[in-house]
Image (cartoon, rainbow, N blue to C red; front, side):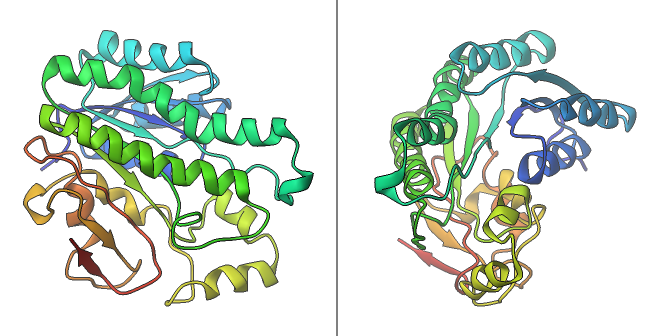
Length: 280
């Protein structure tokens, strides 16, 4: 059974990592997807999905441009007729530099890409979901700036922490309207950005040492955070998971909870730092 049959999703940051993997998993589960990024790889991914029997359409541009945020929603609604899920996944690390040496342009570019683009995306996604009476919005934040603090990453940490605040505010505002707003906070993951964190054997050992299990997760592990069953979670539960372990809440079950229409808001924290717990 395809659990996302009949659903339409916007997925940004599909060049690699979480976005790339999510687009493939969603379409295999029956969803139609609008994929967005800046690089030419979009056409290759769209062609691959469609050749495999899925439904995908690509639109490339800069997520910092408000017109692009609007265009993605318009494309989803005009081409597929609706918008059920939005995975706002674009992000950059920016330059690793001491705060006194950081140019304002570096700070602004990192926040514009990671935080302001998320606001712009939600600004146009929410009205489309309100009109149809349901929806699920997911942002990709980070454990950096939340449970782990790293030097020379002020802009990145601030932008990702800001996403948590944005998530909570939108969840409180739109949960009563049957629109769920969530944030993924991955720990060390084997993605393009994750490789920047761990570009040398010494850095890799340091990053893996931050985690109890002493290794990085694959980008496919948190994908099942994006659908059913809603009854596993309560409003504003904070959940920590260890990748590649056997928690009593599996990745598949918890990710499944995010796109069911009969659940209110949930803030999900996926941080491979400790054994599974539920708070609240």
